Length: 464
Image (cartoon, rainbow, N blue to C red; front, top):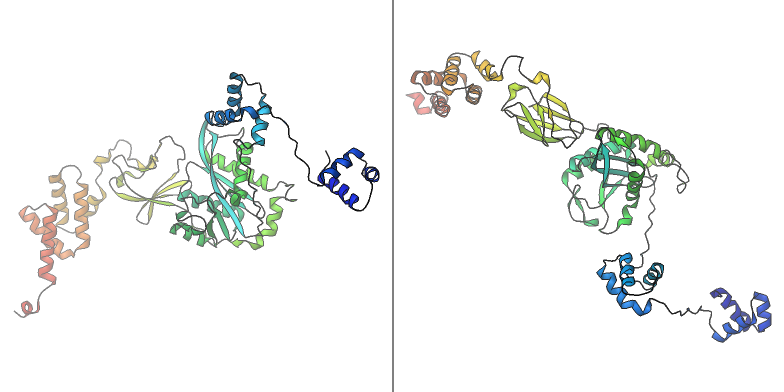
């Protein structure tokens, strides 16, 4: 069949006075074809009207398509069962030509990014073989849009804590940051709004300010806007994770970093260079990292249980047994769990990343061999035993009357001795011993009464 250009040439030559034979010789076509085009009088190619075997069964095909949930294999099986003689390719071609179950694909977008303008961040769940067990991990990746430098890591879950951990590692790996970080309206970063109206959470906005970039979110449904970071997930799943086994999550992330080094140094035909080579030109346009990058940690407050452990995400970590019953501050970092008593570090453990509940014990945190914790005097008793009289005698009587070690009572007595004037405490404790008062609430009221008499004299009382 002649195309539209040849048909237009026939009509053009005829308009110039050329004969049918002359036109046929010039275009190397038959005179009958020339006459057919001249009779039509239009360069448009006529559509072929052919009878289709599936046309009489159109309504049946549409109904079966809905009934079979869009599975054309099942539609073909039902048609054969109903006695319709039709091949599967004929069915699919008919559905394709008539738009049954197929919407026309919208054109994809194209974005050009100058050096240093944007980086894109996203997460995706994957399955990885860790310690011989296939587990689900959350893969987070960051891509520089101009040079296509890629960095990714895997985590057991993805929260704001892990988001800050990942972005810190990614920006440290790159050595710089782009001016904008594009995200996909994830609640990990977003506090309210979507797209251009997105408002990041205050702690994430402060984190971005530290590294001199801003978070932006693309509009909902605009997947092409984050294509730079979406596409590598398929490559990670079918190249990095395929056939690899890992001892633990730390081993996976170490191998991922090595794999990123290899991929970023590989020549890309569509870029006509490697990402490393393009990054060398882009680096001068990126935002430099701050002079000091503090370690990211999540803060927890935990009460030491009776066994001398604190609980973080179901895993139990030991602390010195003398701190049983104390409330401590726990700082969870990327790979460690540090326990603080005020400003002092009292315990530090390697973080457990697995899902199996684990108890981590340090031998130094247990009591000496052969000695039970209950036989050791609490530190409050040791401090009160060295205090000024009559506090040691009152503390001993308080412990004897209370039963057990009396840690809480001794702790409150020590607090009263430190917070109130010494003279008032000694006088009140002397009276309490004389009259057998061992209720610490009454002792505190007695201390306040002594203070009121000794330290807050009125002017008329002083004259008298």
